[in-house]
Length: 96
Image (cartoon, rainbow, N blue to C red; front, side, top):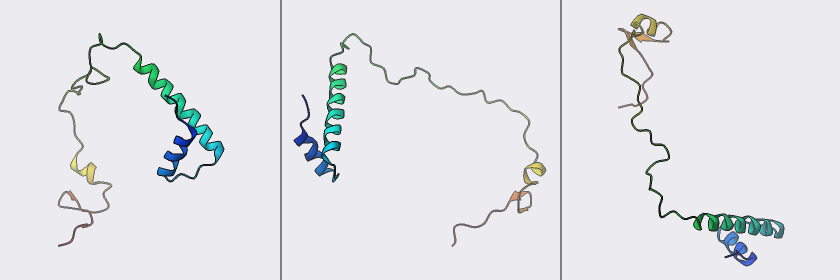
């Protein structure tokens, strides 16, 4: 099934695209090439292929939750512009 120039013009009008004749012809060629690729894919025999749910078969790939050394409070607050009682102070963004 090939796409005609009139069909390209019609779709361009629906999409509110202002295409000149060179763009219409170029688009027709590209769309027909796409349809050719779809036809190639459609002709593949897939009845013996097992369906897959995801492109990768990896599941639950997580790193181990290992306790390690943490940053001391004094070091974390050292570069804070404002802190109080060992906590970061930030500007209020939600008002009552």
